[in-house]
Amino acid sequence: MLALIYLEGACSHSNTENQQSIQEAEQVGVTNLLEKASDLAKAAEQSQKAADDRAKQRIERGDTLAMPYTELAKFLPNELDGFKAEGEPQGESSNTAGMSVSSARKRLLRGKDYLYLEISDYNGGVNVAAQNILAMFSMAAEISMETGDMQQIGFKQGEDIKGSIIYHKGRQVAELSAVIANRFLLKMEANNQQDAEKLKQYFQQLPLATLASR
Image (cartoon, rainbow, N blue to C red; front, side, top):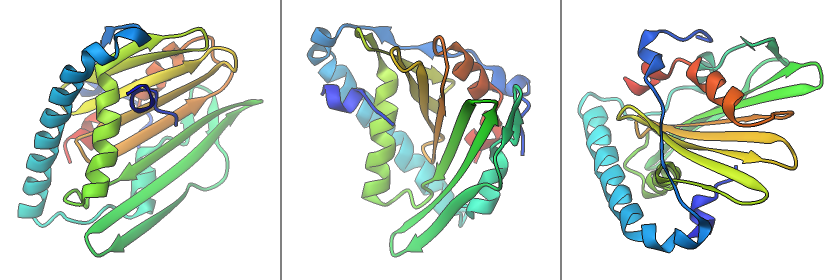
């Protein structure tokens, strides 16, 4: 169970719709994770139902392929809080039988500091493997916990955004993973962080409402 919870892993300006408050998950200790098993199973079931409903809606309107990575990259900023993109965005798109996935990545630099962003579109949502990936990251939103080496904060933002932030205390690296609209998986990472607060703020400045509406 611990391995499941401890997940490693163009609009740069926010609008009012993006600024829904983040609701953090209940704080629990490592020894209490087993007590949360039934809650996690229920959350997984609800997440799967929501994913199935969204996938059905997209299929009905003929939206069954992931966006090209070049279009997906436009949802990631070129500049943010003094960070500037290093070169062109990287990515790939793949459409095979029963599976459609695109990923786009940008690395932003500010002196010796970096901010890494990656977004994947799993619009082949009826594929079991894709749904399992999204469900796993969604479940991480249910628990916040802390050890001597790391702090994990699960969070939800509205009905369509679920994720977690992991702060590595020794390395001073913060990581964020969020599932958006049961379709997109957003990952962020930044070094030289005193806590997870800055990464939360950067996350809020992305076009989350636009993604969630797709």
